[in-house]
Amino acid sequence: MKNIYQDDSLTLHTDLYQINMVETYWRDGRYKKRAVFELFFRKLPFGNGYAVFAGLEKVIQFIQGFRFSEDDLEYLKNEVGYQDDFLDYLKGLRFTGTIRCMKEGELVFGNEPILSVDAPLCEAQLVETALLNIINYQTLIATKASRIKQVLGKEIAMEFGTRRAQEMDAAIWGARASYLAGFEGTSNVRAGKLFQIPVSGTHAHSMVQAYKDEYTAFRKYAETHKDCVFLVDTYDTLKLGVPNAIKVAKEMGDSINFIGIRLDSGDLAYLSKEARKLLDEAGFKDAKIVASSDLDEYTILNLKAQGAKIDSWGIGTKLITAYDQAALGAVYKIVSIEGNDGKMEDTIKISSNPVKVTTPGIKKVYRIINNKNKHAEGDYIALEDEGLPEKKLRMFHPTHTYMNKVVTNFTAKELHEVIFSKGDLVYETPCLEESREYLKQNLCALWDEYKRTLNPEEYPVDLSQKCWDNKMRNIEEVKEKVAEMKAE
Ligand SMILES: Nc1ncnc2c1ncn2[C@@H]1O[C@H](COP(=O)(O)OP(=O)(O)OP(=O)(O)O)[C@@H](O)[C@H]1O
Ligand SMILES: O=P(O)(O)OC[C@H]1O[C@H](OP(=O)(O)OP(=O)(O)O)[C@H](O)[C@@H]1O
Ligand SMILES: O=C(O)c1cccnc1
Image (tube, rainbow, N blue to C red; front, side):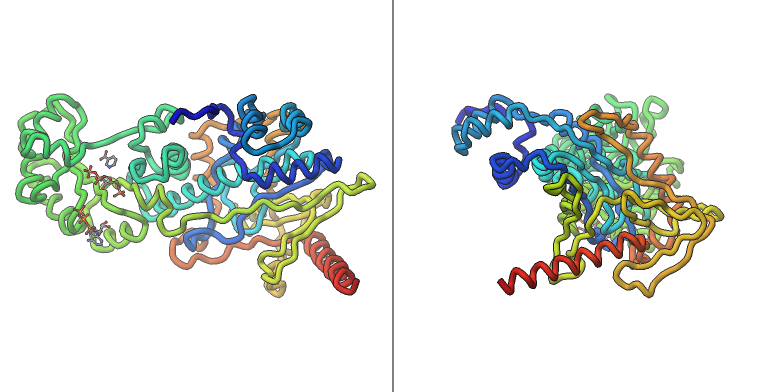
C-alpha cells in the first residue's frame, strides 16, 4: 500500500499527548511561559558504577530540524483532527529556547541533570519524547560498550551487532556509541561512512558452505583480498579449520597479510588455546585469534580467567540490544515555570516513592576534582544562581545526610555547555575522535573502585545545602497545599 504521507520531518517523532498538552497551553494563552525541564536517569544501568553520556549530536540535528512540514500539518488536520488556527500556530513554530547539556563522553550518574531545556513551555514540551528516545538509547549502549572495554583493556573490540539490532537506526547510532565508548571499530559500513569509524570484517560460514570446503573457500578469499582472517569453525575447528587456514597462509606467503583466524562456536577457551599452539608451531606467532559468539563482559571475563588465547573480540547481540537491561529509564521533568507575575517558580513532583520526588529549581552540576590526585571526589548539584565556596566544600548524601565529607583544595568543573542559546546553535560540536578521547580522560580521573564491573562503589552525587533546603521547603509547601485541597 502506498503511504499518502511523506516521512519528511522528525518533528512528529513525539507522543500525541505532547501535542494535546501544547494545544491546551496555546488555547489558554500559557504557551509562551518560560519553562525549564531537566533530563536525568535515576539508576545506573547494568549495575555499573558510571554511565557514558551519548546522544548530543543527534539531539542537535533534531533541534535544528525542528519544524512541522506541510505533510505533517496535513496529517494532523486530516487524520488527528486538529483545527486550522492551532495548525497555523504549529506551522510557524521553531525552537527558540536554550539547551544546556553535558558533552558526549562525559561520565554521568543517577539523579543529575544531563541536559536542560529552558524554553517557552510549548517548545520545551514538544521536544521531550525525541530527546529521551535519543539519549536513553545511545547512553545505554555507550555504557554497555564501556563496561565491555573495562574488561578488555587494550584488546581489540569490534562492534558486530547490526543484524540483531532493534532496526536500522539502532544499528547505526549503536555503532557510534560503541566507538565513542572505546571500541576500535564496527562491521557496519554505513556507520563507518557516516561517522568515520574504522570498519573491518572477516567472512561468514556461508562462504565456506558455498565452496563446500574450507581450503577452497580460504584460498579463493586469499586470491581476492590482501588482509585475511579465516573463519575456522564450520566443520571441525582443530582438525580441518585451523590446518586449512595455515595451509592457505603458507601457500600465499607474502601475497596476503594473514591476520589470523576467527572462532565462532564451541568452547572458545579450549579451542583458542589449541589453535594458538597450531598457529605457533606453523610459524605464525603473530597471527591473531578473533572470537565471536554471544559475547559480553561476563563471558569475556570468564574466558580470560580460563586462559583463553583470544586477541580480538567481535561483539554483537548482547551489546547492541543492551541484552541485560533494555532501557536506561531517563526521564524529563519540569523544575521551574514562569508564574503570573513573570517570576520563575520552582515545581516539584511528590511521590510516595522517595526516589521519585524531583529536585526543584534550575540547577548546575559540578564535578569536584581533587587538585592533589586529580581524581573526582563526586558531583555537586547547586542552584543556578548560587556561588560555590572556593576553599571548603561540604558534600553530603542527599538521602543519607549523615554520609558527608569536607573537601578542600579542589577544582569545581561545571559539566553543562550551552548548546543552543535562544534557538541558535552556539556549541562547536567536537568530532567523534575528540569525544572518544574526552571519555578516556574522564575515566582516568575516576577511581578504580567506581569502574569495576561487579559491585562498584557508589559515586557521590550530592546536593548543595541551598538546593537541599529548597527541595525540603518545596516538599513542605506542596504537602500543606495538598492538605488544604483535601480539607476543602
Ligand atoms: N569456555 C567457555 N566458557 C564460558 N562460556 C563459553 C566458553 N566458550 C564459549 N562460551 C559461550 O557459550 C555460549 C555457547 O553458545 P551455544 O552453545 O549456543 O553455541 P555455539 O557453541 O556458539 O554454537 P552455535 O553457534 O553453533 O550455536 C556462547 O555464549 C559463548 O560465548
Ligand atoms: O554473536 P554476536 O555477539 O551476536 O555476534 C555477531 C554474530 O553474527 C554472526 O553470526 P551469524 O550466525 O548471524 O552468521 P554467520 O553465518 O556469519 O556465523 C557472527 O558469526 C557472530 O556470531
Ligand atoms: O566480520 C565479521 O566477522 C562479522 C561481522 C558481523 C557479524 N558477524 C561477524
